[in-house]
Length: 482
Image (cartoon, rainbow, N blue to C red; front, top):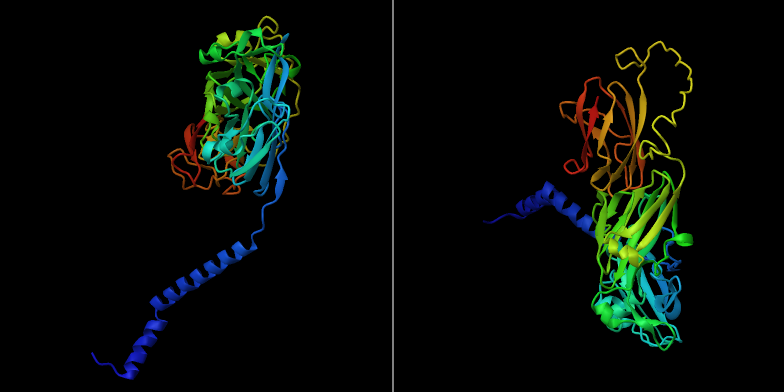
């Protein structure tokens, strides 16, 4: 086909100015802008700040930090010293920074963590450290074999959220752990406010003692007992009284207490349980990447594993922390949470001390509500009641997800998005349609944001559904109107 110069020009002109040309040009421009943007970001990135990790004595934990990613330096010292592990019983304990378990290390996902391990000059054996949060050979153990007086270091990127165990991996490993060389590292997302009022860090492990004293005047590690799993003591926080007496944990009624639980082992799986409490939330195996289990009585924590549990304390008193393999309680595996504050007789009542009716008070007289020209009576001639209900929105779950309210009342759902993802709450009509405008304010809550959904409850009784519009399949619940 032969075309004249004018025909070529005309066809080219139409192609250049047509929709295809404009679309192609737009994509090219977007590519150029993106490339320059990436170049600018790469060139403008600053090195992350270097900060020193706060390390405190268990059961205390370092404060939570919501900050930009950083280079976190963790200084640990391996030590060997004789100390009391049970009343009147001394033993040569090996530790990180003098603590059993070792101090909890607290970092954020995306941090670069530098571990510096020093072996005290008066130590007799080589030590190292293996952190289960590390992606790399030996969890760092190969890089930190330190003879007495030596210091070595390595760094790693904190990639996965959760509570991970760390321990010494020298010798036959089990011997160093049994002597006390284990601890926990918490890797968490920098996100909204905490879901708890107090937090503690505890660890369980076993001691295996010889029946006679060694050359240093105290019992030594009995390797045969350790291999036979015949423990002399099973303890919380390094001693049979590690969490009792002056070392007991404390709380106040109405508070939610979070426990970070590690198990050094080296042999026993802990059936971790708090007598008189139910775990409102339990993060199995220490994972913060998965949704928590709810209303759990006992949770297994294997050697080298961890768990995180939350429980609201409703009633004052002493709550025992145990391994529910209860034969181990006689070997020292018991701790105490001492709770003070007001009684809640709706939750628990000792009928010997507080018989039914003994605490009933005369109702206080209240003024009659002022009349209005248009009373809000819900259609029944009586003033509508108003109720506030707290609702937490975690990633893909409402907590709680079932409610019972009164027909004709007004309910303010106080919403708190404690997750990472955006959420909302929308209530359907009785037929199940979500076309109405009964939705949270703001309509979309980012992670860490709070809001409210005010619902004028219909007179029609029955079960009403609600959902998150962003996650309408898995994030649902029901409201019973009576």
